[in-house]
Length: 288
Image 1 (spheres, rainbow, N blue to C red):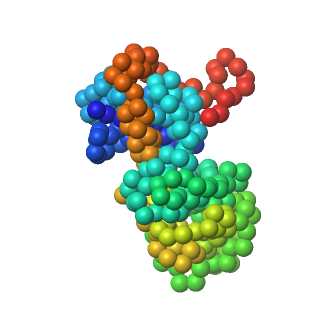
Image 2: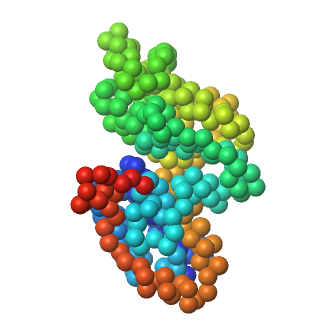
Image 3: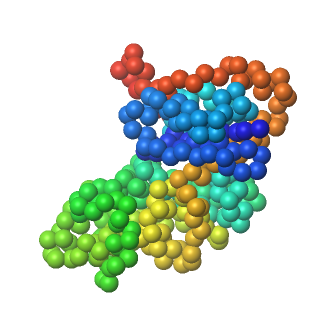
């Protein structure tokens, strides 16, 4: 038996297909203009990797910003719940989850495998991957390199602003003053970590802490966050897929509540076609 979780995030689309005990396939791709209309392709490719047809998948759960626009999904579940379930499966002792995505950041509180509270920042780029992307462009450094470079800092720059626009101006000012790129990046990570910490502490940070999302791949940001919270955090082997993993786990649970005839009926209703974020026949967009 197979179960699938599809996470259509604001910047990255992920899929996980698992069987009863393990992850069998996972794919991560940018949620660019093409993938917003053709997110079905990531499902087709995952099935191809396993030499499976979609009829072999017992249940499919969609999550993320685009979850309501996946016509072949059997259910939609919020990304907060899915991130919690994915992390709980990987790290059962985690009590606090810090998810740093491309366009938002979240704090999730877990007790005995259950979601008990959450907080999120989706109104401002500060504390998100977008914040770091803007700064890396300003400094002329590849986004994937800024974490390592920041660790070379001896004297992190003082970046007082948590607003992306003002932080960008402040970084340029420090650069004109002769401050090294490593010190500027270390200061940026410190400011970003402080912004995230100010949000997360509202749900009372408790050990163990897990960091997920694209921000978890940035070793400089991870270190700044660990310094801020006062102890190390755990990170999944692939921190981008925890939401899709959680969706696949929920898919397994939901399928176990159905009999064979119900599952077969769902399989017949499924269709793999383009995901549409915006109605092509209307000037009004629809966002998930």
